[in-house]
Length: 410
Ligand SMILES: Cc1ncc(COP(=O)(O)O)c(C=O)c1O
Picture (cartoon, rainbow, N blue to C red):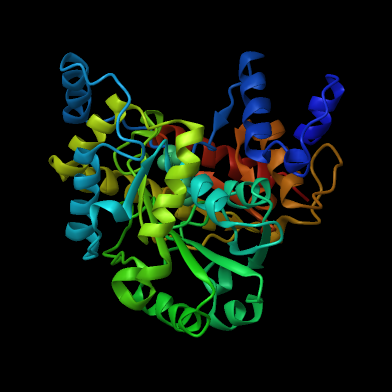
C-alpha cells in the first residue's frame, strides 16, 4: 500500500507530488519485525542503517560545553562559521580538495543536503541518473522534487558499479545530474580512482550534466582500499560537482542530524534559499558537536573500521557457505548485498514457492526470525541486504538461522 492510499483512507487528499511514493520496504519490514518481537518471537533485525557504536565521548563533551556556553540559539543559515571552517579543513586534509567558506553548506543530515540540492536545481521532467542498487531515498527525493529518476542496473558482475558506456547511453538533453554513492548503501561497493576515471571522462564530454557524489561511508573501507572523491581526480568537474558527506556514519552520530557538502557557490546559495524556509538552520548544539568530531582526535575511525571488517568477513564467509547464495566481498560501508538467484524457484516447508527476493526475505523472517531487506527495495533483484552493524554474537546466530532455513528449501 502506498503512503498516498493510506492517507486517502483517512479522508485526506495528498498532494500529487507524494502520490507516487510508497512507504519504504525497509520501514515495512522493520515494523513487521518489531511487531513479531513484541509478540514474543526472538527476531534478529539486520536492517539498521546506523553504526551500533556510541558517539565518541569528546564529541558528547563538546555538545555539553556548547549548551553551557549558551549556544542554544539560531545559527547562521547554512552552518556556523566554526563548523564551515571545520568542513573546509576536512575536505583539504582528507580529500585534497580546496573549498572556500561560501562553497560549503551544512544541513540537518546528508538527507537534507540531497533534498536542498534537488529542490534548488530540478524542474519538472529533469532527469537524474542513479545506478542501482541505490539508497531508496535518492529516487524518492528526486520524485518529490518533480524530477525523473533514471535507474541503471549495475549487478554483482560489474562490481555493482556504473560503467562508462551505460552512462553515455543514459545521458539525454534532459539529464541534470548523475548521482554516485561510494562506498554504497546497499552494496558496500566502492569506486577507486580507476573506476571513476572513465565515468568522469564521459561527464567532461557532457557539460550540461552535473555530478552529485555521496561520500557518506568514506571512513568505512577495508583491505587498504584507497578512498577518493571525484573532484580530487578531475578538478575540471569541481564547478559542477556537489560533494556530500556527514558525521552520521563515520562518528556514529545519526541522531545528531548533521550533514555537509562542498560545491559551486551559486548552487550552495540556492540550497540555502530552500533551507531558510525549511529549517532556518541545523541544530546549534549538534553543530558544536560536529566541529569536535571533524577537528578532534580521529583514532576512533580506525578502531571502528577494524571492528566492522571482522564482522564483514564473518558475514561474507557464512553467506558464501550457503548453497544458492553468492556474496561479493564489499570494499566498504557496513552492508553485504548477496545474490539469491540460486534459491529462486525453491519451495518452503509450508509449500510456498520462492518467486522473488522479497518472497525469500519474507520466508527468512517467518521461518528463521531474521529480518533482512530484499534487493527489490533497492532497485536490483534477486539480492538481499544484510546490515552487519550489530554484535558478532547476534550476527553468528542470525547466519546460523539463515543457513538452517535455506537448507529446508527444496
Ligand atoms: C548512502 C547514504 N547517504 C546518506 C544517508 C543519510 O545520512 P544522514 O544521517 O546524514 O541524513 C544515508 C543514511 O542511511 C545513506 O545510507
